[in-house]
Length: 392
Image (cartoon, rainbow, N blue to C red):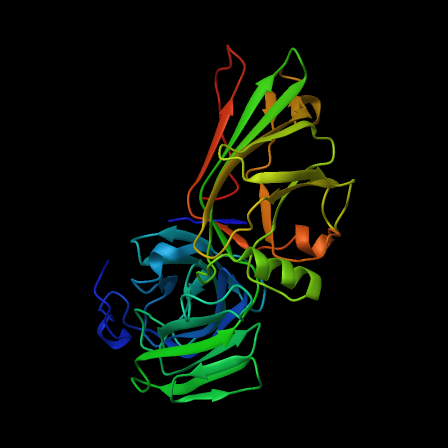
């Protein structure tokens, strides 16, 4: 899961250039929009910048985001393409970020950058209501030109989907069943709204709120974890039909209903429990220990609602467990305590009719978090507290 971080008038890029940025030019821009991991929309913008100023050296590069998309930004990173070096970023406004170049760009020099965005909730179901066993169709819409405070000489946009593309705006060119290309455009050519409609039956959930709480107890060598979730299914709305669901189960047909919520917990977790105020969870289980490549061992808490979660439905619950504190708390020779904790939990939604849990189900990144809160309760008497976060 990813955490959502986060107006100026929408104007074509040529109107945004100012004397403060005159001299830098985007000679070529290629934007790749990846719609294969919804609800996350990943955009990689490859840009070649050139210093056309006679004498000025540029030490920073400004990145712009459309007004409509800025509230949906989850992650932003900038790299030098050749070296792979990550550049430091500073947020200037709701729509602009400034990247610090590793060295100043001299007159006449070029530099290639990769700008990686992750957005959430940028696609909408079309139609907004379907039968629970119908295919899900989605609509992606955006400006055909990448916003920039700098003049852009040439650019194009490539949109890739997981399911087959069904419709797209005039001017686009199909590149296989699951890809559409808009452009190349030169100068001011091609500005306007473009759309791509496509099929994707994957589960999509959003945590409207997610709160994780840690309670530290020295006496019991215990780290207690409590997590609160308020979920919403992002799929198209459908009327729940129990008969149709049972037929789908026995005929091995797919449907759009989320049947299981999968929460990954550390392998050493003990005393697990959940609280569901409305009593919708009828079945729960904890898997045996599993391990994915590059990860610590974990188990999966499986919560199966009595009524599967349909598109547009909300669902709330909280769960907790205990961990051995000694694994997360270290004491330095100077008697300073260092508590190292996972920043956020992992939760996935599953619509599969199969009873067997797989690693792919548990590791599915299909739940975005709109509002996240982390609380840590330290023992009485703790002082001189310093906090380091994995995100800015």
